[in-house]
Image (tube, rainbow, N blue to C red; front, side, top):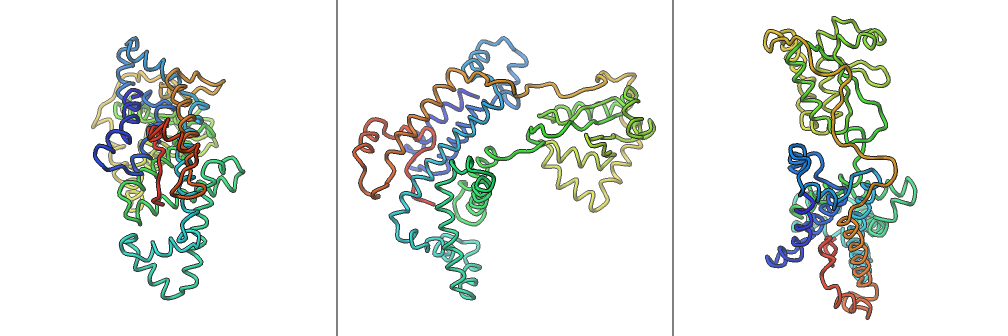
Length: 410
């Protein structure tokens, strides 16, 4: 993974896109995602690297790549996100300084025109035209404020996350709205989707994504049922962030008694108990598990539909009552009294070693960001300052390795 990421970063914008004559902002955002993956570092859990490392832990290539990229950790992940966001902020600063010299933007009318034209708003131009016909002054003022808000967002996209709760919320949710419009309203091909994935990687949080603000959900199961045993092992494999703990019902009588659950209930259904003492059973538990485990999120709409139509609980009950006949029984489950998914966890004590290659990438990023920022069109869009010309001669298009380049598209 680290080798593939570095090669793709080094070639995607500078070599591949240029040779095809198809340089796009989408590929630039892709490079920023690759930067985040490299610095995280990715490739330790759901990857071919992880499979090879589990089967051949002493493999020299795997050990060498892990040595280069360093160990994962919470501080390390924060640094990776900050580095990727700083690269995107360079694009935004270039865009906003360019627009400072554009009469259409400074007058606040650029978005007004974009939304009214079928070429730039093919899906909803008719709605914009209807609103404009109904209340032209309201339409113009609303789009004007939206454009000025956009320019403020460009400037705050990096520094705003350090300026308190409300400005941070503005940066995150304005960006989310902008990317949703880019993906589903404007004809920008894959750009909006790349940006949504980028924003999700930066700011999505919660228990399903590894946050530790709640205790694991305890799941009690019949430890002499083959289906229950397989179900537990499957759920444990899907539980990337140890959000669940599994307890064989016959070996956890004290926990059952403490929450008023009979042994018969534990043998009839899977039973879940959260940290507040709330109890989930049967189909309701499966629905809760799907919402808690990110890999099961695609099943949430189907489970919700089954719940609304009352088909899901009926099918679950039919299988639950016949599970031992259909799948057999086992003498004794090999799952221990308290079982959680075994896998790598993020270190929280101290800053983990960054790794030689990762340190070099961060240093290179800082140098190339500085080399790019001195080229911003602060005075005009046609001429460059002597410092900008010197930077261009020395570094050329090197910042494009991190997706940082000149743009004038939004």
